[in-house]
Image (cartoon, rainbow over all chains, first blue to last red):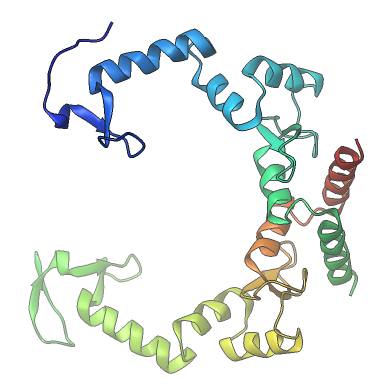
Length: 128
Length: 133
């Protein structure tokens, strides 16, 4: 339920996309509304909400993927699978990886050829 | 004793104005903090030319001009990807030997992979298996 009270504009959040520049509901009502819709649409889990927003898969699907991978990172198979790895071009989820593998592949722009170059670079400097 | 005289500026200051130094008998540095900072800065410039050279020397036994020469020899690009801006001295962690000058992302990526060739080939397999899927 909304309070329907008349309040000064400082009691409302700023919102650039509305005509007035302010939210329709006052801050306490806005907070309550957000919490209710999070509860209704995402089971009260902000993790589920963000996963749906970013990758279009829910928390249960991610947990299922982690279970399929045996709880381990899809790349190194050593550390815990925690990060949802996705193709930056298509947005498709590739698997669940660890923080280091995810960051490493990101640093090489997900480019297999560049990682192959890195392998040659490391091997060349290792031998001599 | 709560005060101490700085022989450089000649002022007597409270002990809080002197840096701690465990290797001296008193447990405090000889000069007061502002004097100490000035001495360290001038000495660093005198012996190493620049702060960058000082740190390069400490870590890799290089100085700024040697790094600039290495970048020139690489053709002004990252030694790995050949396109990025070379600004990070890459070294093998085990032997501490300098391998080349890399761009930020290549240096970061090698660090995250832990210079592990096997892990990198697994990442290649992973990326390609997903692309072909």
